[in-house]
Image (cartoon, rainbow, N blue to C red):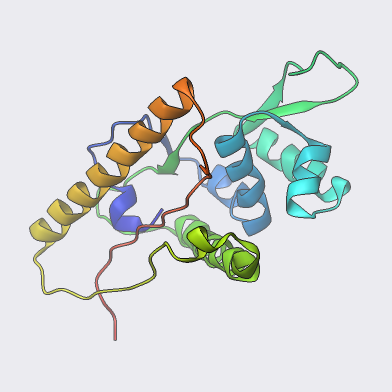
Length: 201
């Protein structure tokens, strides 16, 4: 969700642009973003399921779901198992970003949103580090963690972002297609995080 990548126009998947600052502020919470991310990745879940995965108290999960509902980001859905005693929730948008501004600047609400995004990304990697030694050896031996700095023009930076996004889309489509047909042996969800921005020393 880095600023430059988020504003790329060519996307294979539908991206919802959020113009209302009240909505951006409502979801600018790392725990709330984690709940929303779970609904996007796993599909509909109950409060109890979210609590079990995240370790958050059920009351906290319900609070964040209410905030997401008020912001139009999540809503209740039909029970997946037919048990109407449980409340199931789903995400309303597969992907979102702040609506672009004509001058390219970010508002105070967008700044708060991107700060929460940064904390969310940091937490993602910290949870991986906390669990890496419990993973099977073949999973401990794969992955990527590096950064690089280039001398580029704005046009070249935009082109690089498009190409990186195309690679991510290729593997997303591969993953979705395979999952529809069969679950491959030793398959698990893999997270990638892409950010590109002018280097500030």
